Image 1: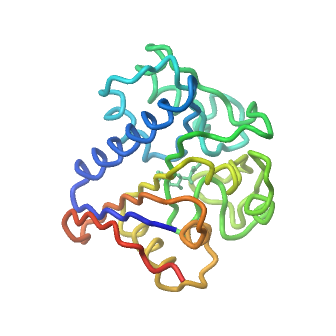
Image 2 (image 1 turned 90 degrees about the vertical axis):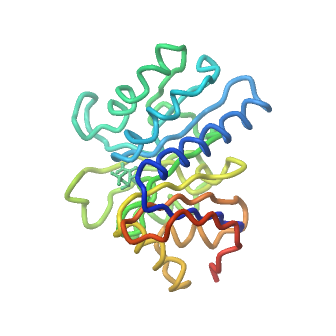
Length: 233
Ligand code: 6PG
């Protein structure tokens, strides 16, 4: 499917471009629906993007946010994505936006807007290359499944709940944003190898939903907006 890839060597430019793209997708969804469900990645990337998004004038009361995935730990645990989103979305929440736990999403409810991060192993959300529940995450049509990565990621060694691939691909266009040479390498491997079955490679190979990919790496070429159809064979 159409992949628009944007490479940045400046973290500020990368974050600003991602926030711009997120605002565009939110506004597009708002033109079609009264209330819009926005799924934001776990991990640290959103802490760089959300403050820039919230500088924009958006009808926050018409937005409901959820994490794309979460660690199955108690609320208040430092690894809980929901709690970090509550912190990073405080201005939007003060403006009337709501935030929900992924565990409370109904089985048939899909997000209208998705911003994903990318793991160095090619995982997106909590769909990992290996582990329990990964096949279900890629094939089931309900909105969420539980997964247990194998090996457990050292930075968050917990079972997970994640939006399924079907739910992640529900928007008109999905945003992937990642910073770091390791993440860029994971993306490039997914393109180069073709048959690599990492989750990001599967996203690139599908032909249902266009992707906008924002990558920041020190050695990355300067901003080269490219809306070419990237080889994903
Ligand atoms: C999680 C995520 C995960 C994350 C990537 C990137 O719960 O960890 O949702 O998929 O988006 O691992 O993480 P960073 O943004 O911290 O690089």
